[in-house]
Length: 115
Ligand code: 5GP
Image (cartoon, rainbow, N blue to C red; front, side):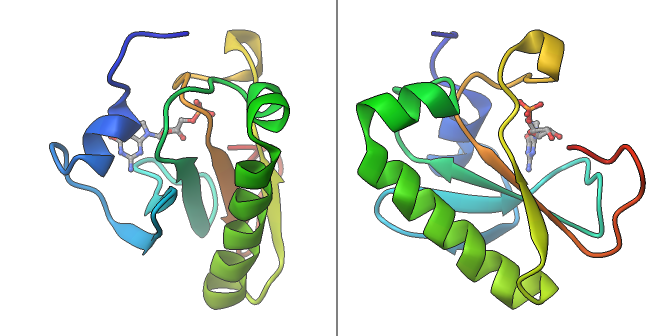
């Protein structure tokens, strides 16, 4: 587990500004500060109990299902329901924030834009 609070917890607490596109009791979705695609939105559980998607799946599968449903809804609204859903796991895979989050990538993707 990484240091707490994570950058996303600070966004959830409104200590840091972000472009919020969706929020529920359990999730927040924000535009990525460094977009890798025309639509690049992060869907983040409000709890930072889980660092990775596998931990989330094991520890709270209902919350993972909520996250996937929210990603679909966001993609329906922002990119016609066509998107990639990416969870980076581990530094070598490009994970920089160890508070689980999904990248919703949509629009016309360029090669290598894996979030
Ligand atoms: P990871 O590399 O962990 O899979 O994804 C972390 C993502 O968070 C990156 O795409 C990065 O651009 C984004 N990010 C990092 N800091 C901030 C921030 O302060 N605000 C927003 N909106 N996105 C951030």
